[in-house]
Length: 446
Ligand code: ATP
Image (cartoon, rainbow, N blue to C red; front, side, top):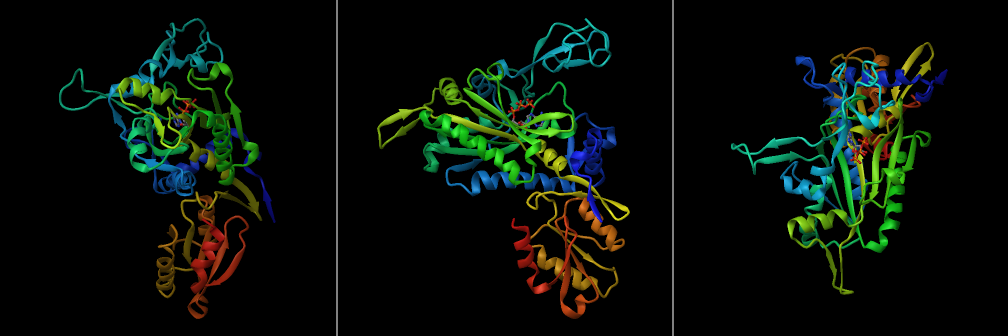
């Protein structure tokens, strides 16, 4: 008898705790610098986390770059000079309103307080200082001499690296609007209130596309990217009732944006942004053109028209999305008298696609198991586990989302076939070793 409890049926704090606990226990995500007591709100991605995070980024790259002919990639520098951030407006505007509680000395983001007058840490009222703008960019020094000219900033978003390479790419890639530049990489923000595990951290990874279009096509491309991006999360297994597209109200819009919508996931504490899609107009290219003195525009030789392309930007968080995929996939179900924990991850996102499990660790089975493992490794990320009873090993794979387990038993030595068990249905099939790669390729449809 199999009865599904389902992620939605779990009480909400429990789901959060269970996922965080699983992440630590099964080496997805560790608190950083733990042997030194930890370093607040920074995390390290362990053996399984690094595989899954890479899969999230690969799935994005595949859909945004590999499967398209109108998008090229870029990997720009993380360190950048103040001029970039002057032009982008980040030096003046990339700040949150910060208040200090004079009673308990804690700091808060004023715009996130439930009650603007009461400190959520100590409960005192009327203890806040005046709000002041706190710039979120990390600043450092480059080179051996401190002082003017040596200031550098760690980028708070990847997008500006793309805008400042617009000219290089236009001149060298033979692309013309509409075309896009995709980038994945680390960004840094000195968040006042990091928290909720990897949802808001000071160091995180973004996946951003800047899509440059003729001005009169901006609205239709904005619609197009909203739908594309929403569909991407659905295709990778986020249930429709845990995903929504929310258009920003006019008072939420940046001054340069004529439209922004967020793709939001229903986290245990409520709806939270996974990605913003913004119609940024010609703001960024115009700003960088003015500050650099370079022409950042497109000249259409066919029509003789010269214009500054408008930009549609779908900007997603890789680390934050990974957390959403984990939350959505987490399930517990009753199997006979046992509770089975299973991560129902989309195969593209699962850290391991296949686990190779010899039924016993007797010498007679291991050479064959290793032979099967080596035949699969060039095709799939595989785990290999020889300890404990086979039932326990299946459960360990279920818990980390491995879609298929391949068991080598004593019959394998006679018939050269293996038992393949599917994660969600737990159904088993006998498959000849010679057909195994083809069979798994077909089932996984990666
Ligand atoms: P938020 O309102 O949550 O601070 P934002 O609107 O400032 O996010 P953007 O600048 O649009 O975020 O960045 C694009 C994406 O980058 C976000 O949708 C989110 O997935 C991710 N992101 C932004 N800040 C963080 C952070 N501190 N930690 C993890 N991911 C983040």
